[in-house]
Image (cartoon, rainbow, N blue to C red; front, side, top):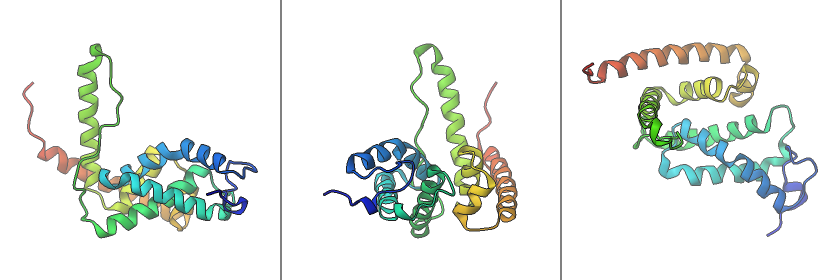
Length: 189
């Protein structure tokens, strides 16, 4: 089934009109969308379907993209909306832990890799303690390195509100960090 030229995003595809171009767009952005959904708390079992839904929305609404933000920001906004829908129906805490996203290391670095993976698991446990909206703001600013203006556009709020939410999210993260550290078993040194 061929896509009509009107259905193709005006995005970074600069005049592209074919399904092959959509395929390139999909391939270029799939990893980002998948990681964003996971970081926003979407359970692993729902990730593939959620990512597909993000791209379906992007495909249908591509002609609405005005270029005021980057393609990644636009896709993140769609992903955020999908994640919120999924999390509304689910419990606050995810049913399964986030996967390790670190690549396999050479044998000589196995100890360091184990330390890094445990640190990553701990960071996700702390993020799991946050409300979805606070978690999303932290992911946007600290992981995806989005600007306040980009975040404001995604959330549909004034920029000053974004900075207030970032401050509150960081406060909540610090409190969650303390709670998680208190639950950690003491290690013998």
